[in-house]
Length: 158
Image (cartoon, rainbow, N blue to C red; front, side, top):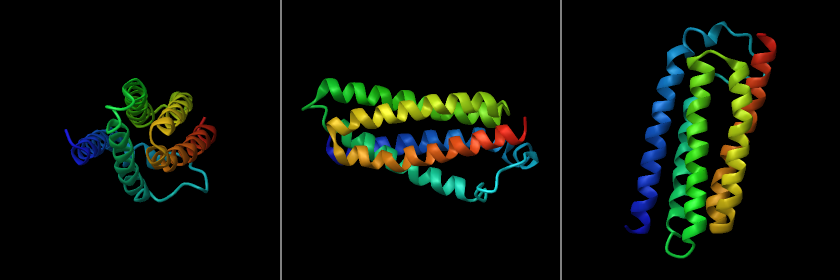
């Protein structure tokens, strides 16, 4: 498989799985979520799908760049992609916990694990491709913001 194909496969996969995560979110974004007390730094709802779309696209490029190094750093690439997969599962799980189960506290605990896994993925990716690692930085920053938002929502609605 060539370089562009690997990147395209990873972008398509992350965007598609991100879309499925969005479907979980939709289960309560128009019903339960509007009833919550939210902090002043909550963005308009329209920001979330745009931000996540961009982040999933960047994540896919990042993972594709790492996958392209499989012939040169097989062990590191496999480890990096395993961590990428784990953090992605945690990403989808957060949507289920927060919006599906409507449990901000459980989602808050889980988002800390998600953040740590994204950081670990970034750390591994950095050893393989600096560009791939930098492409994960906006994701790490957004999840930091999302964790603060999650914490505030839990606190204001406990």
